[in-house]
Image (cartoon, rainbow, N blue to C red):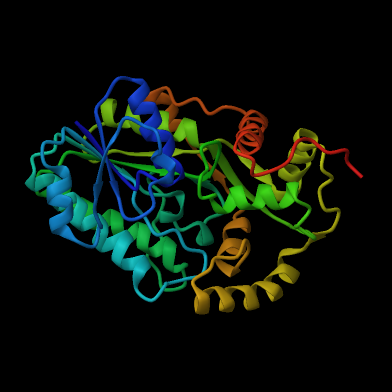
Length: 331
């Protein structure tokens, strides 16, 4: 039995489908929403990573646990939710897995666990983590979550840790923040772009990496899954070619975008509704270094596909699920 927490998220929806296609029995731990699992032959159990007892019950009889549940935030700490889910939730999941005799625990962390704001060279698995007070709350929580997991590893849990970069791809039921960005481009709801960019990776390649890490990784080993850097301008240009909808022509410098982000960040913290761009998001797009996935390539055969293939498949999935109309003529 394979158990997946966060099974209805972007990575979870793709991982569950991958595991089912490979013939595995899958138990999905869900909090509320189950739409991403509709029609799938999967056992669904209610659980909350903040509730240790619910995880003990969910992990009973599990051979492997993929821990994907997280609170992704670009609006800072959300009234305690970020730390409760990303730090204490990891601790609860790891200790529940250890108590239930789980053979292998695969933790999906993030590239944001690394101190990107302080780095301008190559980021690899040995790079410093985001533990300083000036790092975004989400970044700190992912780094502290790793520390919590390490305590369970030291007590005997066999676990590996994976660090995806910016994730894009199909089966994006949320949709994710990047999914919302692409949809906004298609609907001409994006008045301008912002400068900067990030390292992006296909969600299906992340899933393949997670599975291989679970099968081949050594206890305590870390893997970065990245696909390559692309600016927001170049991504919008690729999306324009695929969608035939013209991208915004104005690209706001990061300094100018930061002024507007002050207001959207404040609004997001009040409402807990995440805008597309906040100070935390812009901080990530200022990162000028290079993310290295060489370790995962050598150890796991990780092979990320080109971004244009990811965007093409994502556009097709959005059209299939009627989130966007058919191709339009660029004006």
